[in-house]
Structures are given as C-alpha cells and as structure tokens.
Amino acid sequence: MRRRLTSWRAIVPAALAAILAATSPASAMFVVFSDVNSMDSTSAPRDAILTNLLGGGDSVLVSDKVSGYPSGSVFSTFYDGLDGVAATLRSDELGASDLVGVDLLFLNLACCSPSAANYSATETAAFVAFEQAGGTVAILAEPCCGGDMDGVNDFLAELGTGLSLATHSMSSGVATLADDPLMAGATGYAPSTFNPILGGTALATVDGLSAISGSGGATSSPVPAPAALPLLAGALGLLGLAARRARA
Image (cartoon, rainbow, N blue to C red; front, side):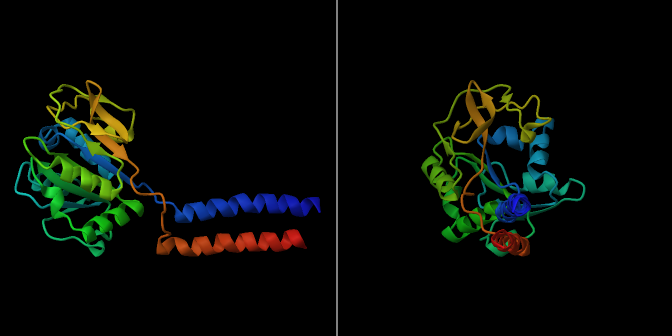
C-alpha cells in the first residue's frame, strides 16, 4: 500500500505540470512607449530596446493608421534590416488571420493623434487573443498637444493592459532603467517630454515617472493552443491511471 501511495504522489505533480505547460502562454506581454522622439530617433539605446522586444522571433507586423509623426515605416524598416527578420507595414483592418506566425505586433499610435479610435472592436479582440497566445504587443503613443488621451486610455483598457497615460510631463533626461531583459543594452536612453505611464512595471523612468512600462495584459484565462491539446489529454490520462492504481 505504501508503494502505491508513493507512485500516486510522484505522478500527480508531473501531470499537473504538463497541464499547466499546455494551457499557459509562452511570453505574453504588452509594452507601452510614451515618447515618440526617443523611439523614432535611430540610436543604440532605441535600437537595443526594439531588438529586445522581438527576442528570438523573426516576424513583425507594424500597424500604422495615421499620417502623423513618427511614420510606422521607421519601425518596419528597422526590423526588416535585422538578419533573418521579416517585417510588414499595414494601415488597413487587421484580423486574427493576419497575426498568424507573427511574433511582435507593433501598434504605432504616433504623436498628438486620435489613432486609437481607428481600431475596431474586432481588431482589439484579435490583439488580445494574440497576446494571450504568447505574442508581444508594443504600443507607441504620445497624445500630447491636444491628442486624444482619453481615446488612448480607453484602448489600453480594452486591450486589458492595466496601463494608462497621465498628463504630459516636462521631465526629460537620461532614464533610470529597470533590471529587465527588455532594457538590456539601452544605457543612455533619454526621453524628452512624455506622457507618464501609470500601472504595470516601470521599465524606464525619468524623475520617477515612467516613459516605458510593461504589463502581462489580459492573460487571466489562457486557452490551450491546438498544438498543446495532445499534451493536455496525455496529462489527464496520467491522472486517471494514477487514480485507478491508487484504488486497486
């Protein structure tokens, strides 16, 4: 009897670990940037951050529905220039099928624009599903100078980021960086005036105000990806087998 109990105790943790692995997203996150100048200007710190965002991925989709500053082509051109990376620039409606195979979705809301209102409920749902499945969503927005800050904040709330933007700050200078892989190699990153970001994890701060923040986003109820379902079924099978043996 003691041997059967030992086997049961050994099998259950392994089975539960398999279930969790099958149902958890890989590296889901939202990252918000609130200074367009420091992210548009080609610099070693900016380039390092953009590269870190992609991680080991090789596919980027840049969504740009505005004609304001900066142009989304700045980011698609940068990523397309990285070895082994393919970037696409889109200004039309996006659906879930457009995000298949994409590792990084970069939403360029630009400066002083109402661009967040250009995204439909269908697109927003596709972005949330993409992040829940383990994708990275980067958002550049600086709604200063009469831009639609309420619209941007509503959009961030709909995405489930837990982040929001506050009134434009006059703080500027070299940022204090968090000890985070996204900030690796970004020494000297210097935002100019920006909209402070509230909530999430502050990644780059000036005078205690966050110019870059990250959030896990809407990941509270991850859905198993099709490829994970066989693993999930196998784990459940192990639990059933262990239960039968324990009763024998």
